[in-house]
Figure 1 (cartoon, rainbow, N blue to C red):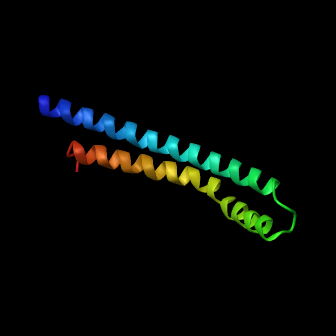
Figure 2 (cartoon, rainbow, N blue to C red):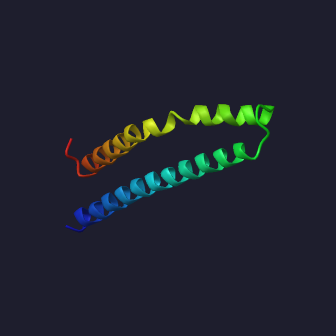
Figure 3 (tube, rainbow, N blue to C red):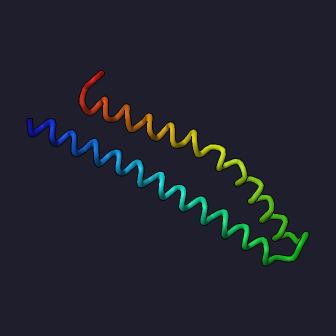
Amino acid sequence: MKKLEKKGNMAIGLIISLIAGLVVLAIYLSVGFSVTEQLQGTQTANGVAYNATGEVIGAMDDIPAWIPVIVVVVVAVGIIALLKMFKVF
C-alpha cells in the first residue's frame, strides 16, 4: 500500500511540475513580448536597431499560435508518465 501512495505522490509532483513549467513559460513569453515592443518604441524609426527589433517581433508573432499545441503535448506527456508510473501498459 505504501508503494502505491509513494507513486501517487510522485504523480502529483509530476503534474505540479508540468503546470509550473507552463506558467513560467507563459510569464517568460509575455515579458519578452512586452520588453521587445517597448524597446522598439525607444529606437529611431527605420534605423538598423529598429528594423532588427521589428524582425524579432515578427518572428515572435508565431509563438502564441503554438501555445495550445505545447499545452496538449505537456498534458499528454503527463498522462503517459502517470500511466507508466502505475504500470497500466
